[in-house]
Length: 414
Image (cartoon, rainbow, N blue to C red; front, side, top):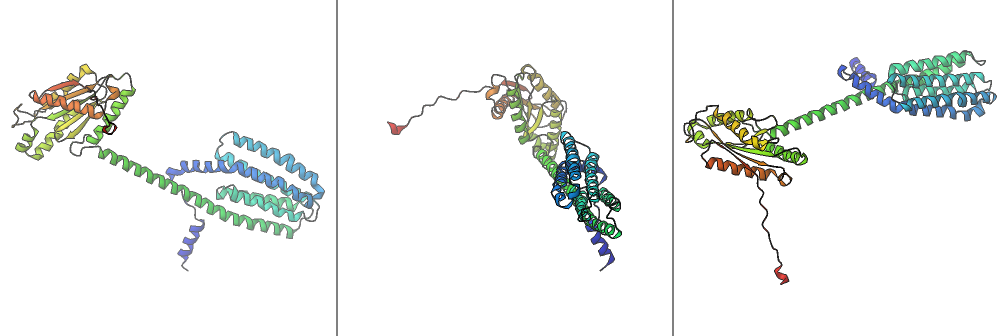
């Protein structure tokens, strides 16, 4: 087999997945949240195992049963209770979780070794194999980074070997056998730890990739939504955007008792068909864009200018005052006249002009107001402005006609 293939395969098994610099802080938070879910349950499980082994002490370490009870119930249980309360009360930094988990494992492993070497029972030395549970606990259950897990495993094995060497039953053969077993178990556990660390990093990066895809998709959808509400020629809102803003403005006004009126202005370019016919469609499109820009520059910050269709524009005025509407209309009309855009075919003036109809709904009509009613009223005012000679502004209050009284009857009942 090719050496490069072997290296690649080994790298896939134990190779570390790097976390980009920009994501390291977020990855640290991700690891902390995992440790918050692991450390306390791990301490509880480890304590349960440590205390539960007292059942084996009865048969394996009968000569130091009192000492075993003192260690397991007088030391291990109080320590575990204090650590559990400390972890449960508040969020702790990652190093605290590492210190508590690792310190607990070292303490329990050391105490277990001391119990074993303190006994003269014949099976006591073999009882040391139970200490390998602590080794596996450190390298796998606590989900420590590989370097920290390896350090903890080495520390446990060194402590075990040191205490065993001081035992009355110590021998080179026993020391070699116990240490060899522990090293083998630690090596297998560390391989699993490295794989878990790799999978954890891949899982984190996969989630980040999915989130970025979702954010990109949401951004694209938001962009499409905005584009769908814009007129491609003038860049103003289109009919769809106008309806949405008008509906929102009416709803806000209905909910806000301080709002005086909601107004809509309909603006029509005078004799625009004649302008198109004489100047051409390209010039007509340019004229529409210039008028759109003039109107947009003449409105208040809260107003919305939209292209209603053809040569007609609509302006929503959500914070208007009835007495100021005439002035607002005059400002719009003056902005268009100021362009001095020549209109040789107009019978109204020598330049492009607009007719403006403004309709408003006061507080008495707001509860029953709809965008359709307001638009129809503005259209009616616009028709009045055009009928009156064009190049003028007409302001009218909305009126809601009562529905005609109807009598229904059932001829079959007669």
